[in-house]
Length: 460
Image (cartoon, rainbow, N blue to C red; front, side):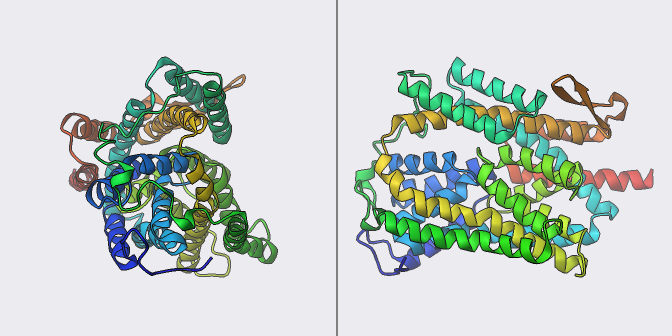
């Protein structure tokens, strides 16, 4: 577990790598798809550190893991290039800008969230976020649903979570098993294609700095994996156990530590899919925040660099801010945000440092790639569920839960429709789909229109 900083055989120094990963972290806007695209452009096309197939193999493994696949991909490639030190550096830098930005915005939100102009700003952000989530459904669907079998898996996943509230991990597990055993049975429905660029030869592994063969540190042996796994597991779960013992299970910090540690283990499929689970538990089970506030947090995450799942920091901040115990609310909120970020992202290093050495030996495993294809299809259905959930809470003031046998439906009160939210959401959709305007300008534009609506209304 030695940290080495010398120049490896591929010739890329640690200092140069630090600059590149800092640049990637600063440009990591737009959700996991955008972040992965930035990494591919810089690491594969521009720097030629890794080839296309190796990049895809690392990405496929990260998409099979719980947690933010973009950050895990950064850890994986950082580890490939510079071992343990490289993985730690790449993973920490990838999260740091978003952590600092969300913490600052959370403080402002907690102190000024009730102010009319601030509320109006986040009202506009919600409308834009709804359109962005719909865009995510379309983008992921185009990439993942290549045939009727995968389309059927997506539809089944949507029905399972929307009508029957089936636990998200069960949906992902079932989809993975279908893909795995389907490939073992000889089905071609789950065959995984390339990155979509048709440029595998141009960015061949042999032409990259890393080359085809795995570096020496990529095969450390099972003893190294056990040691690093034990250290990382202790760093991750140690604070959780200390909080449970000292504060008890009903304390808000214990609840935050346990819930987000559990989330880090059971949530697959990327940030948008995870948010459906987080929103349901944080809003309905723990009461840490309201549905509209969850959308406010996502708006923050969309406009700042780093993984979208950093929105969980906002959730933990508000949960602790509103139940501070003997602490000041602001200090409790900051500690809650830090704790949430730690237990959310610390496991990512565990999954990569323990599993990546073994995955390097399985770069041509078809059954694993088939499981990934099926999981990606199921994620489309889960993200569609999230889009519907957001639409109900953005476009309507009142939503009622109706039970009809085994089916549970969230139905809006039609008379509670918010006309301004509908108009802003439609404008955001036109900007994204028709005019091809970027996510950041759309978010800023909708936020500005939200404030304008508030100002006009105050004079009416």
